[in-house]
Length: 425
Ligand code: SAM
Ligand code: SF4
Image (cartoon, rainbow, N blue to C red; front, top):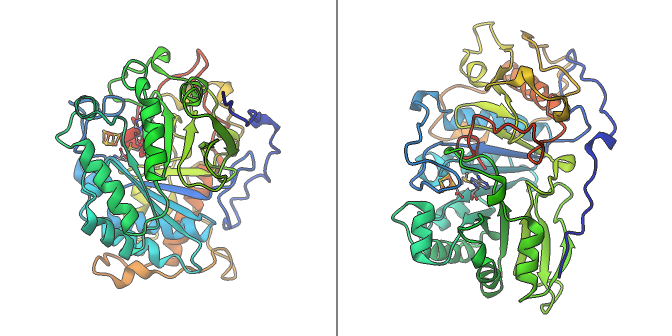
């Protein structure tokens, strides 16, 4: 039997970072606990062709289209975030492959990849991923892909996703992604008690057979039906026991310090073999203390934590004409209860207040990154240093207010109003 090797680090043990000086332009995105943001997740749509039982209710309401950020607006945020130290951008949703501007987005992001160190990833349900699409994504600059696949049984797959897609579509998508040179290609599977925990060994076999990482995710309370119950969570320890009883596993650890997955290899395979199991134990073993993620929702809310009740609406700033003299950092918008937030959520710093954006002094502040996407066909407004400075200030303030961690396992936990599909997984 294998056990999770990583002891839980107590977030409060982290040294507080230097107090935020709002008179200085930010040079990195760092929260009040000293955690630095490296991983930006852009949700480019809240729409989806699936209605997964753990995610999206059939009668889900979508945001009006004009409230969704444009590709240019996502690129404005990403450009600034990369300047502030982000090294990985994950495109997600909803289903990002539904977005007609996806290729433009990937190309634009690739233009920020000045030294080749920017990872450009996507999470997709795989239903649109054929050889031609995978090739175009790769050619545009995508580096890696994660596909979601919760069951290998067609009847069950149909019941979970409530879609017309098939398991074979997703398997073909995995093959297409591998053939296109996307690397790594991973599979995400959400394990829900009474739904698919009896397929854990089959999913492990898939990892072995295709030589890919399969990541098993604990079911999180982010479904739009609000049907999540603690009893439906299959804990990481149980997942490992079930797989380990058939295929003994050897713990490897995390691929990077801030990676959400604890990774295991099959003990009977070589140490550097490709087929591995990753466990994302968001509920039973949260990894908040090393979190380096920042999320932008499809409608332009900045969310430092999946489970936060507070979020910051950056859309008005993105849509303020830069010559209007009105670029400012607006007050935060709570999605329903931020003010009543429990102390256990660990906010040490008040959320940002409305105020003028400090101008960049002496040309300092943001190192330069090319505005590559402006050379494309979707150039809606020219890049503007004062807008970029305002975006940087906005992101830095929101990140500084990032909470210590979530408290799913506590009786005080309240599910956020936003769902996984509306936040971007
Ligand atoms: N539609 C794409 C897909 O399914 O891959 C991308 C968006 S989806 C919200 C991103 C990831 O979140 C998927 O791997 C999905 O399985 C996962 N997810 C959605 N709801 C979840 C929940 N309640 N608990 C855990 N993971 C969830
Ligand atoms: Fe759509 Fe992904 Fe949510 Fe499934 S998990 S409903 S594919 S957004």
